[in-house]
Length: 153
Image 1 (cartoon, one colour):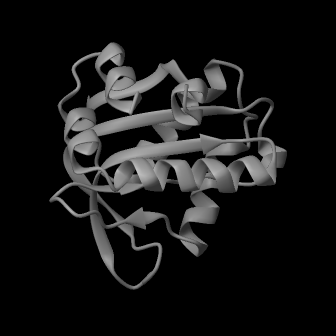
Image 2 (cartoon, one colour):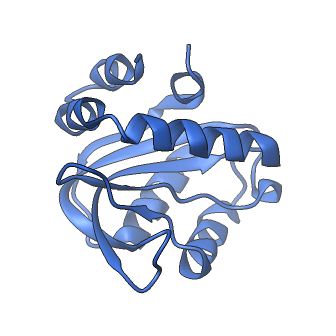
């Protein structure tokens, strides 16, 4: 089983989420991780603060882009992952070129308690996101089982 499937909590998967902006997505996913016992109260704000300084928008090959917000390990009780597909794109700033806005429809929120694990997870998610058919399957998922199936590459 890959790291994404191992850490993705089914209760922290939101499909076809209707949100106004990237902050709302981060709040929604952080709340789910908090309710499930993965993160501290400070996690959502810390992720938002980090996103403002070090954005995580990732332009992909197809017409669907992603973002991978995360924050420091001191805001995490135990490792977990939340994911959302969005009904309409919201703007995140580009990870590589922060002045560039990226319309995002797929968000992975990382809650990891080891710096090394964070790097490995980011690499694994980035690799999965390079696979256009996986991204399409995630966006069209209608249940958590579809998501897990799409990630089982």
